Length: 160
Image (cartoon, rainbow, N blue to C red):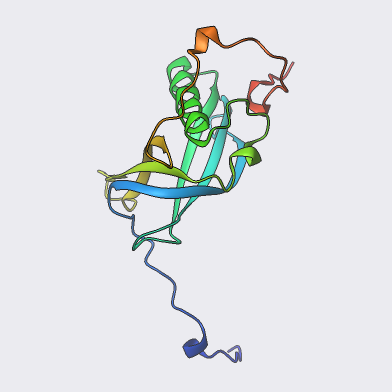
């Protein structure tokens, strides 16, 4: 037996860990990290969003972008397109460190992904990004953007 002095009237109970309903939410990134894929075939950018308003204010939504995936060029292309959409929505068009995206309001489109196996609970999935004002930030077409020397992002560095 362990003695503990704890007064539950002084601490708010933990919120439900169930997914928030599908919809569009004003949020910002509060944490990010590049981590290796479990398969060892690349790297992912893991992002933690915090909802900024409405009844789900303070709730966290997590996403992972497989920005480098040697086993699936399609997965890599999709993740990089998603990262580009996030960069455009936040106005950070030249990204050299994921912390540049932190604390910038953005609208995230969220859906609930059902676990068909029943082994795991349902979870949220971020399916899109929009500028916080609801208007996309204009940008030059990708092909027309001038090439500029920039720091190589961690997921673009390949081990020799």
